[in-house]
Image (cartoon, rainbow, N blue to C red; front, side, top):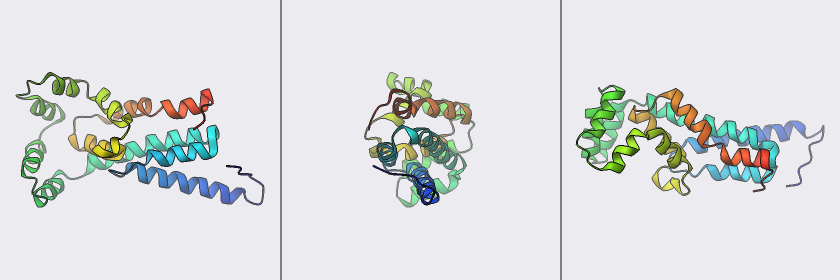
Length: 183
């Protein structure tokens, strides 16, 4: 895109970039919306100059979705699941709601003989980073849906989740910033 910033259009360009960043944060935080494509489009349009903004917005969006899940009342989720006739999921939510983080993790691991499931829960931050970065993850909720569910689960600490997301979303923006990768 051959965009020229001049004194007479600088405010409009700045406003358009900030509006795009806010839209990107909102879209990426929504479940089942492939919002990462908006970030890639902005990287393609503006190049390496916009990569730091895209990186910060991606981290902010993922943590916004996590916070939404963290503070979403589990009773409301249980009622929604019951309304959708998802009785087993509603019962699981009702059983897990009063438990602490350690007890929820123990409940999920209880009676599980499948090694892969057990490993995924033990290495849940690695699994979270992989799920967020998996191509086509919009089928399982997209980045926003995955992070909302991570917040709802109550088994992820906010600081460790932030560090996981900071590392997990860094490859593409860093490649554009430091290696000059063109999208």
